[in-house]
Length: 229
Ligand code: SF4
Ligand code: SF4
Image (cartoon, rainbow, N blue to C red; front, top):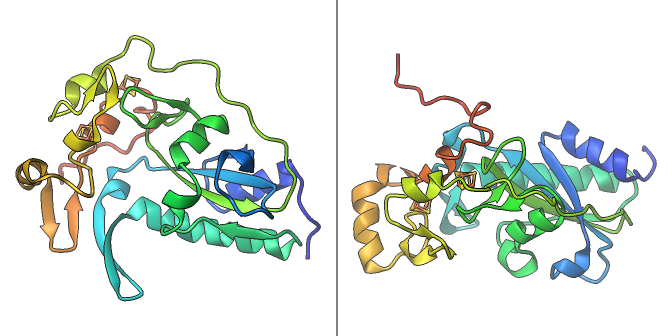
């Protein structure tokens, strides 16, 4: 068994297990249990749009919509928690079910210095733009917290606002009630979803990700659209 890792060792382990961004958050900025001394905020770059496709998964007999990216994040977070436990630390991964009550992952990613809140309502990172999804691992390791980024990446850009097909993005940010990606749509939005969101099978659909693909930051790294040729 290796020794309890320091910040560098912990982040190296997370990168080794497939995360692309790692920040340390003060647990006081979350609803983490009392034993937690640090929250590892973990970014996974979703450079292929396929990771944003929605799948209707069966979890212990209950069905819910999810994204492939979230399933990957939860599995990798569990592996990281296990690896930290092997090294003598206490660690618990954030599960999909706990993600709303324990932590706001967007705010956590911003506070842990992984990016800024962009005009599309998503965390925009320096390297991948908004093509990142976030997970977390709670640990009793006492690690120094990372600081928020001081730069604002969006500056005068409005590409995502212009590209949104429903006008959900405006000067006041994201109007969730007009977003095609909302999991609990109104009757009006449900009709729009039926028209604009492509259902592939009863259990899979192409979710709207126009405000992500429109972003110039990180677009050089994105997997290009494949037209079958
Ligand atoms: S997901 Fe689609 S509908 Fe929602 S804000 Fe982005 S571009 Fe607009
Ligand atoms: S498209 Fe422009 S305004 Fe929108 S998130 Fe990206 S940089 Fe910011």
